[in-house]
Length: 353
Ligand SMILES: Nc1ncnc2c1ncn2[C@@H]1O[C@H](COP(=O)(O)OP(=O)(O)OP(=O)(O)O)[C@@H](O)[C@H]1O
Image (cartoon, rainbow, N blue to C red; front, side, top):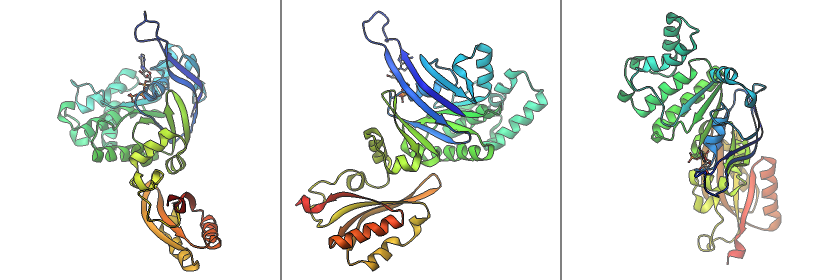
């Protein structure tokens, strides 16, 4: 659906007369986004997220590299080509960008009207369909000022979908919303993705957004993609320091004991190996640990645990202490391997004193 090759974007220094160097907002970005997936781009403030998503509909012109959308090199398009491209790409924004002097229905009708392609009757039918899709039929005659943030974003979504785009870009679409409304909007986006098979690319600084709806994710830092892959893999086994800290901030599993290395003080009582177990999928609900415990003289103590979801997939993480003879401990690891339960020895507490 989208192929980004060696993309660069440089901004001139803020003060043109200064000797300051140009700002490299994006450097050597290479990404492949599949048709029908929800692809998330996450990063801290200033990492380059907005610049990257805005290049996908050429609101921002790259300084180098190529972007193919449905096999068409969009960096080479003239004005007519760009106009046609933008009809195939919808976009929603953090602050909704609605027309305040128009009603909900008129906001949604606007992109249909400016194409000049449809009769008034066709437009009215399409607006009614979109209002129903986003759950706003009874608010059709209200003005944006009379709506909550979540309702405004629903209007934004309906407007973005008006011309039946192939791709929806979401620029921090839930950042201005409270957690409950965020969940409702994310559910709506997921529903639309499934019902319409629409490809969605979103940018966010919240790992929770990625975890709730994305299939794959790229982590951006200092204009570089530092890590990318399936959400479960990146979320459960983050490699880069930025990813690790964003995961730690968002996880229900306390960072103090689970995701950061234990301190001598916090685990002074431990005598065995401190091991983190991670399991993904149906196995999450199977009593593997109790059957291992029954079959081995090694002692397993659960120190902390959680079960949660990454999109539709359940996963579990346990922090356990493992004590016993080396052969018994090795047998526990073999059994864990047989069940595809990942185990990481965080420390041998013998060394903690
Ligand atoms: N129009 C511009 N002119 C000059 N520099 C810019 C411009 N837009 C962005 N930048 C710079 O490019 C870098 C990336 O900015 P960008 O807005 O893409 O980051 P971001 O990850 O979206 O940040 P935020 O989450 O704070 O919006 C930053 O250093 C920023 O200051």
